[in-house]
Length: 81
Image (cartoon, rainbow, N blue to C red; front, side, top):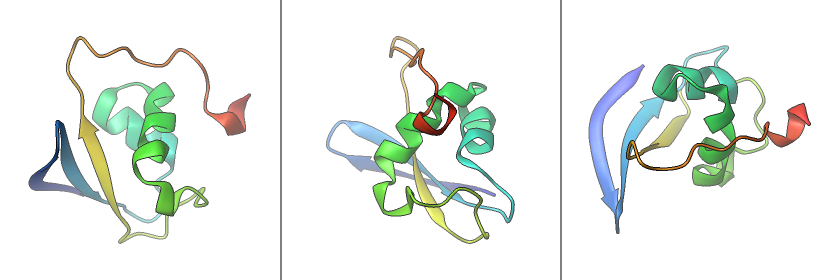
């Protein structure tokens, strides 16, 4: 469930997202960025939830709003290496 709130932490803009039961880091990254490789960036921004593999639902995540110029990681998340 996407939430309309956008917050600003210094220079980074965030969109808030409330996880749905069954969400994974990969699926959330794909929903927001159409690229599962961005899962590692989501985990970095939400370290307090990093130990979750499959969300129960209701967890709130900060999703960084990235510029088109920002480099997208080319490596797989740690659990896929």
